[in-house]
Length: 245
Image 1 (cartoon, rainbow, N blue to C red):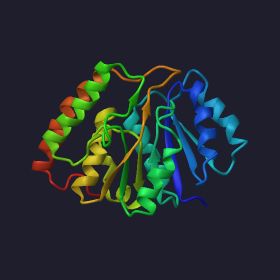
Image 2 (cartoon, rainbow, N blue to C red):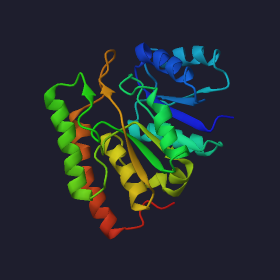
Image 3 (cartoon, rainbow, N blue to C red):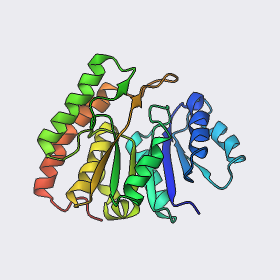
């Protein structure tokens, strides 16, 4: 059995999901994939089910009743992975903004170099973002500075969503205490791992904005991230053991 599981949340990603999956299955390292679909009306889940016949032992699908949020999709996937024997669990977007080839580099950072959480970072080696308008690049970059200032976490790309966790990280975090659902979820998971003393490594990647489908960014997700950072810091002061399982 493969030691690695890639979790891909989907909502209306029919135009991208097959390309992502075929790229993953072409890699030198063996990855299994779990698609967590939030009842996509465009037929994303139906396409995944069709592909499962081609990849019966390595492609899995969990369907949820509605659009319940990115964070809860990953928590669902983490619990699914922990019920099985995967040692390395990945987060990855379905829209090809994350290059599937970089999965191997994230894997190596944990499996060979001994880190507990590897983060695909847009900002550890300059600013590596393609097809974003300057305003969005600045917003994302400044958001990471803001998070570092408030939390003191030593991570340059705090909202990154391309990651590899070693199993022990997810086993050690009380997933029921992870409350955020948007970009703040990405911050909260890194913060929880760091507060428990795990070793974090940023691996430089190039992030390319989607060319097909629609972005899930919204003002609500942005507000959650801004205020969520302050809540994280405050709770870490009054409840220092919050995230321990």
